[in-house]
Image (cartoon, rainbow, N blue to C red; front, side, top):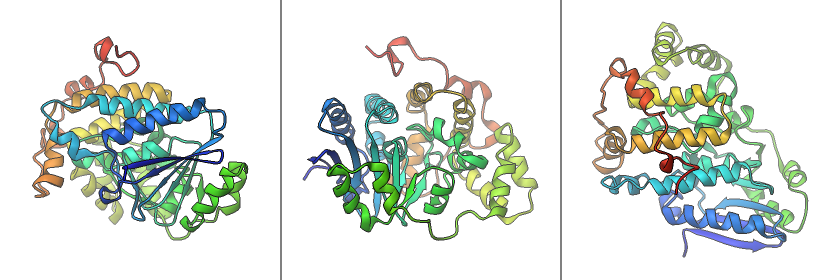
Length: 343
């Protein structure tokens, strides 16, 4: 059985992520096949909408297959990310309704697959995160664009710390468009495939999100601390805040790769005023450089390979991060290596 399934159901192009044992971690083949299929459906006049769903009850998608990237560290698979990033752009601009039916874990590249589309219907078990700074990477797949646009600095908080959000906060802050119980996903696919208007169908099944998300006191901590103009200022604000959540947040952030946290802050600072395509071009520049450095491979080693939970970051502390080294991640590539100008 394929890791990704495609079906024409009535007027809908239906995609089912089917790599369930790996929580739908996105492989090279999955990305290539989906990118190709979306282009085909875009040109097919009988396809009126695209719907993405998952065969797993635990996850929509846990992100890209980071172990695959680790195993190819001697010859980094840049083209895997190139195809993924160009597909993220295509999803963002997709001319037909692009609907993701999400429940369970949705992280990293899985977010890029779903949250850039027109509609995101999320179930009660939705667990969103951009956890990349914890493995020496950065919140890519469009993180530079959507995270700084999340209200009250919650996107910066998520991108720098890797903190998780449930359905209530995802709906509250506009990361998803509808809260819908997964029991209704099949009915949604059926009705849209029979020609019903997607927006009306989703509205019919939408509910209020249940459960408590980030309460106001925690939001005030986030809003104040992550308004800081630099990583060091954010750290100082968290240290100065007596609320226990400030201490928790600081400890979480300080457990991440110092260079990755600085990269995340800088990409979101820049991305706040850039177009989606410019954000993706910037992320690709960072990607090419980060795959030549230490921290990504060290983070994956500590998390998935040796599983000792003790990554040796380079540099080891936040104070040691060089501004020159940080800015070098964002410099233009050779013209033939740029995301939109590859030969």
